[in-house]
Length: 144
Image (tube, rainbow, N blue to C red; front, top):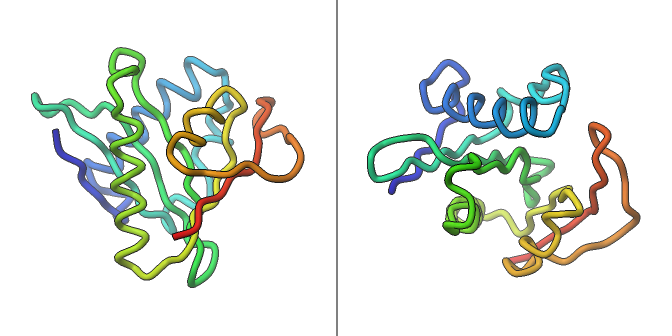
């Protein structure tokens, strides 16, 4: 297993991230493509987890909100790799990256079904439930 990072939206790593997101969010969850690929792609840091046989299996991106806060977005694990703790591994890598860049906090909007997953990783829910792409979400954050 390896995790590669890119900001280059022309790179194969980024294209692997988009392919994972397309399968999970657009095909499985019915999110419109125009909402899934947004204006923040070029401003984000993209992470892709590859299996031992070099297949892309999970992705996440970090969007800087200010000098101290990243927003964790587009966390997705392909169906055939779920339940193998790959989501936790790629988030740990993103958190490590954020800390090395001297960021102090990560915020995210978790789908309600994913709230327990993020709680296990140390994230705290706050605020009201909101809709994003027709799916219920809750704000969550983790401070370092």
